[in-house]
Image (cartoon, rainbow, N blue to C red; front, side, top):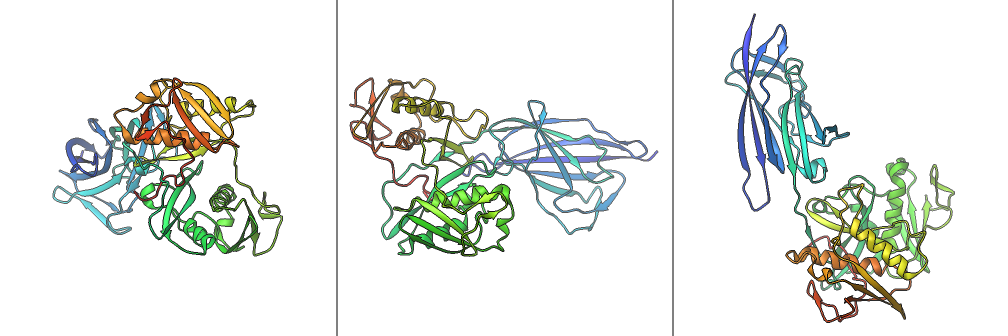
Length: 438
């Protein structure tokens, strides 16, 4: 019986931050090959933190092995969390060589494959995962998979809101979906001053977000032929041949992104969609556009979405149907700020559990929030998180109808500072949320 030995060298390249050089780890896995009964090998487990690229070097120390190359599809990857397989795992195998190119694996000629399982690529929340890697080629697919224990631990930064814009620039707030198309995330982009504000806004929305935000990049909204306004209504003419009018699952979100974005322009309150420049009953099956669309202006909890590089605050509308008074609205919104979205680990709490909202006072459009002393101790070693918490409080409670100013008390006293803010000051809603560039 013909026997040979395959040696697979697994090289793991891990980048912990842009300030640190990649760390290289090598492990040799010896795989005895008995071609008459298939392959087997002695499994080896490796544990790593925040991997970026993983490289596989496959070498035969005995019989030569030949097969056709399938760039980008030479490996199959599975991942498990707490023993459960993850569906629709995102990963990227770097393409090497030409399609259908003959690959010959010998003692002196290795096959090198690279695969990207970085947290940005997979989109997986922080935590521990078991990865399994399989070869797709018939001569190698009987080999038991390589197993790898991976721990993801992100360290996102937060860019605080601004109340000013650079000289000769204007700020526009653009709403983009995150990678799973579940939420719309507001991002502020500063562009050179231009009198055609609506045109500039829709053009910038069409460009999509800066890739550095790791939001859903590429073409987001349908093609817009013309945009103008009358009174407080924005009219948006869309072309009927736009490919992005066909996918109704994402079209609703795309149209809402237009509505949220255009009504951030001062004075604009609603959006009328005009397919082919005319009023129509529907822009696509099941999506009516006969009447203007209004943005959701109800109270919202501003929660941090973790993109792994940055935290981005976004408005989330919880169930407030039981709330009647301002106090009840405040308590429900505060509870959501403390809980985040437990069903989505990428949407985190923004206020520590030790912080309590003791009382609420509302008069003459001014809202006073009285917290316990734990408010001042929140994230006392992390100024960015303190700024994020402060922004979340200001955006959240100023979203309540009628509230135009806020004051923060600690046990009834305003003689404190937090995140460089003097709490004796009366606060208003910050102008520019999530600046795209720092």
